[in-house]
Image (cartoon, rainbow, N blue to C red; front, side, top):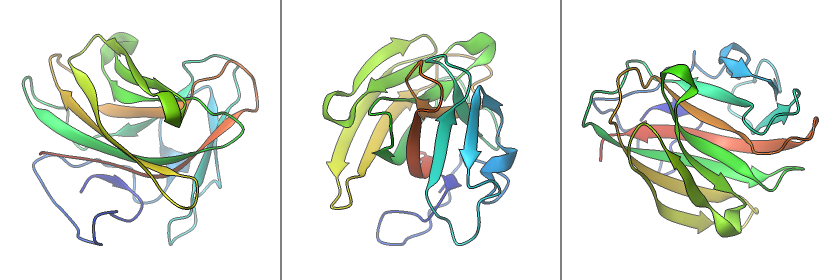
Length: 173
């Protein structure tokens, strides 16, 4: 398993060739671009994080860092459990150098791949959960050097809008 939060598949812990490094459960240490994360620092056990747009740009996000860059041709499954905050729209996907990305954006009811600059990205599943959140699984094939993070944030240009994130993992299929 790579990422933060509890593993969502039967409580199983999965270690694979790829593993996210998020400084434990400390989103206060994640690299960010125009957002704030609350609570900050995140208490253990993991509680939902609010990623809040503080800069008024749709591309503002947190970058959940990978322990190592992905290799060319490597395929990973990215799982993000997320819920609407004040923003219904989200932006999720691998980030490469120079702000190049492959991204899934939109509301839970209409998520679409909107960019594939660093390799093919697809939505494998979108499972609604009783608490209003959804468990999203994306498949990504790396076609660029320097892919070192998964970007997560609200896709909104309104300062103060936020998205709730429960879990972000990536692993080899």
